[in-house]
Image (tube, rainbow, N blue to C red; front, side, top):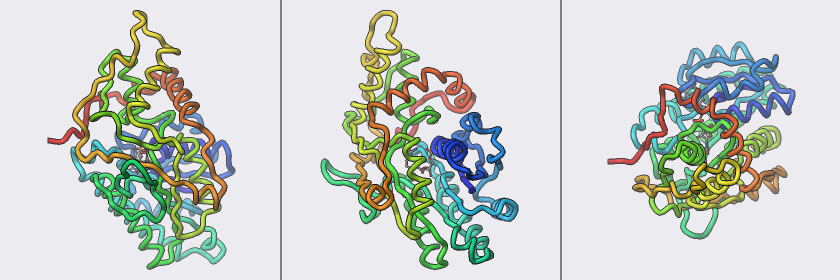
Length: 349
Ligand SMILES: NC(=O)c1ccc[n+]([C@@H]2O[C@H](COP(=O)([O-])OP(=O)(O)OC[C@H]3O[C@@H](n4cnc5c(N)ncnc54)[C@H](O)[C@@H]3O)[C@@H](O)[C@H]2O)c1
């Protein structure tokens, strides 16, 4: 099984799951950008079932060679530029990796697939991992379904939408056996400290202002990363070729609720010396340009067709997450050294 982007947040959770819970051999193809860290794979790096190749998915010959030498039964494609705020500051890498890179993988996978014997052809799958942000934003009510029309609004979501269209085109045009998943915001251990939850935990512990965009009322649907890893494998194994599956955690929360929950967990597990409450550090900052108001996933298709449901509630998942960051401050220092200092990105203007 080939996994792209396996040194990132979700990819590494997926590989830890595949190595610990299944008999698959995994080839991790990752360029190791600022977001990719082999430390995320330490728990499984010595497994005989795990191989790593530092390769850019945009490189045609290198990717062809990987398919030629490992002969994978499937590819799970997660490599991407993934941070909306960075896409606002500069979109070039988002277009390159998310669109050109996905196109390159589709071409290489198609050529490989066409050369397979019939039995191997029946098994082969190309699973493309995407986001609910391709559907745009919701008002106070409603949910994203697999049939919701695309309406991406940020450079990041537009690049992911574009890659989803390419994947569907390779299915309809070349019969490449693809599957697509669109998931909500993930959280959990090993998330690079530029996204909301790790930023809040670290800023709180450092005694700094905890930035909340706009009024803090934007709503996201939170999915615990290990639940997501199980869902991806389920879709790969049991999903119907050509279909799309939305994956969500049934955990709609306003950003301010998320931040206040983290502050109160920290008040309990790591109280400050002067009995100050962490929530006193919350500071409202200028909103993200084009900040989508609300995302919420209708995950009934994957539940009804494939029997997948999230195991974590937000309360249980966020407690585990805060505890993980408290026990892994060294990891946070290692992955941000020389490349990111928790500063504000994507403010626009
Ligand atoms: N994090 C979320 O909440 C979320 C939600 C919905 C969808 N997704 C999607 O899930 C996937 C994984 O997200 P994540 O949060 O783990 O991202 P991440 O930023 O943590 O990891 C991305 C990984 O891809 C690698 N990569 C980037 N460009 C590459 C290239 N050109 N060639 C090879 N490797 C490259 C990076 O080194 C990194 O290891 C992405 O496709 C993302 O769009 C993420």
